[in-house]
Length: 411
Image (spheres, rainbow, N blue to C red):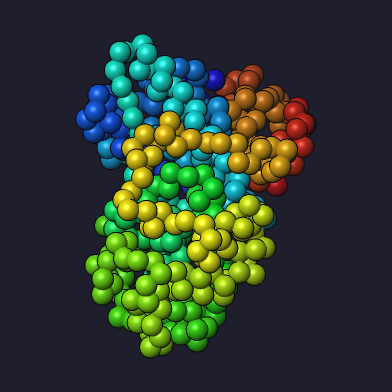
């Protein structure tokens, strides 16, 4: 289904409100190394349409959904892939990780074909990963400063050490949290291991959803709950967009270059703890929420890393070489199959959009032709080309049951 570049016919109805189910999503950015030289992807390919050989489904601007359901776009000199929304439920971190790595594998296959046809080389150097979690606190409950801005500042204190231990490496410089209106976005290095990424996503969603329910978002809440935070730590403004980041310079010493088991950190409570101690205690406090949303494999790995029974990338002498050729030196290994872990409902809706599944609305057949942002499907009425938008939630009753051709009534 190729995107249309013709002038769009009129839209018959305004878009519905944003999706009502709380969701997560993961994005990953890669530096594009062409013939051994880091090069902006737009300078080489121009558009994702010149990377992927088959038809694409237009999403927004210069981004496109791939056959995997994930999206591909170029963003300020990097190549970026993203999952569709995954509703928050048990194993949602594993589902989002599987979606991201399947998209990375598909992209790598397309780049392999481009290399063969052009006689050049392209490597994807892992740059960053962004873990997005819905901020859906009802407006009536946003008292005592319970805003996404204050939540982001608080989460930077809570998440820094456990995310470091699971997701970063010796060359990392920070863990950040950005407020994005109806979601918060946790930023860290790209993690060249699907299992560690799934563990990170699981830990993040469990902690964020728990902290979101706290009565206020003041930093004193961590002291009241005996959650260890390094004394004197103060996050700095994020380098891109609004938000905060726990940079290595925010600590008395560089935590990314330290011994994770050395008791080198004095906490706000006056204890002398190691990075692993801080990460483990934080994880223990939030374990009920993490366990409720986790899958067995990710929960075991989180526990093993926190106890020192499985290696953290921070324990290696340097950043692994697998960062430098994502999709080849590190690749999806079938960690979660469909038989082990079903597809989320939103994934199934996007799958029908990508497949071009027709649907009957108000007695007329409609064809999906695109996705608007993350939350809405664009459909074209076949008899006259009129376009309408429906939220993913509107389409859930039909497409998650695998039924095509049923009538969708307006809400």
